[in-house]
Length: 479
Image (tube, rainbow, N blue to C red; front, side):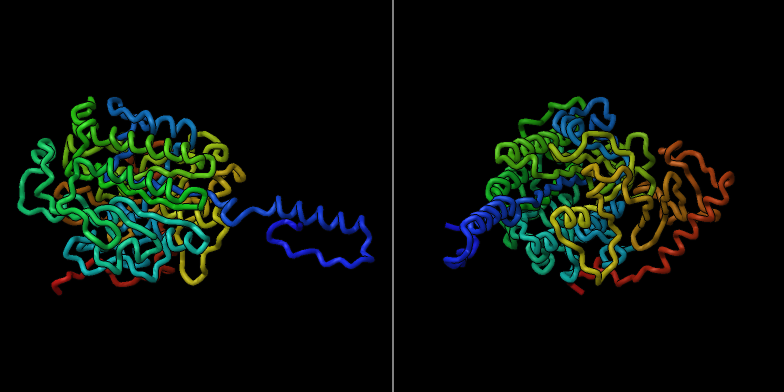
């Protein structure tokens, strides 16, 4: 019999026996060598935190928070020290990750309502191509778990953007508050009842208010359930934790266990979650065919003091375009494929879509501009240097800063959530050498006029080629 999937050989009686045997052997070899659909396509798991600071993991320098599972992942994989997000607050950052495009290109940013709220009428347009919709075309199974924050109305939910399923809270965990009370006191008491946020499955509400003391565990269990459900089929799982965004809640097994207080408890439970996810991949026998990426949406919410994180040696935090607002602790692991090392090359969440599509064997459509770069040859060791050498820092709809190589120019600055009402414009721009001065303490513009001119030209060229669209964040349901 011919190999399965091949037509029966149509050889007449005069065909030499040796030729028949040779043809049969060739077909058998082709059958063995030809992989089944999806056999060479890696799986992708993105674990995305909310408001995690650059210095909040022990592998990134925190002296008291213990993150043993992430430490192992960093040792076995790659620790990226210059990895950025598309924006310094939730909604636009998430849009950038999923679309590979700066939020200013698809209207997912605003200078007034900087994120989506429960009364927002807008969301991520269905005309946008997301990681999930792009991979679905390549035969992938897809699941979204956790915080979405790209529109809570049915037409904007994950199930309208290429995800087969959704389990999570559709916006930030501090929203829908029934009355104003202290975030600090409610968190320390474990009282989630005033945060009337819904826990959803696909388009239906399962629970309201969501029990946030169990939310990290339930997100983890859902992600593991999907790993087991997908089996040998190629898959993409987007696990977006609601924490450590305030209010802070942790499971009973993690309460008062960290030296770093309630914030440490929360981070250490997220670290436990990472360990559970990687163990599930091992048990399912797919670890060596799965790229896991761990990062966060923006820097720490510093105004919440010990309920907020730290950006380590970086300057400022969430809500600013200083490094602490947009450079994130990032770890990638792909056993057997990715060479373990510390990566000093530049990368960004914008790069995940083109990288995943490339590794899946697909191509991006040419009908739109992408801001992401394909990192696949670099992370697999085929290329010695990464493709990204520039980064554009947006605050709402405005370009505040640009990085090229080791230099970063600030055209405008605004301190994060600390009372600075208006942005400060700098003429000439501030200039920092991030290799020498990652904390952005010493302005070197006067000593580097040529570099400063190059940065200004880069910003002008970028903005000249930018096609802006109206913001989808400003409308209200009541309008």
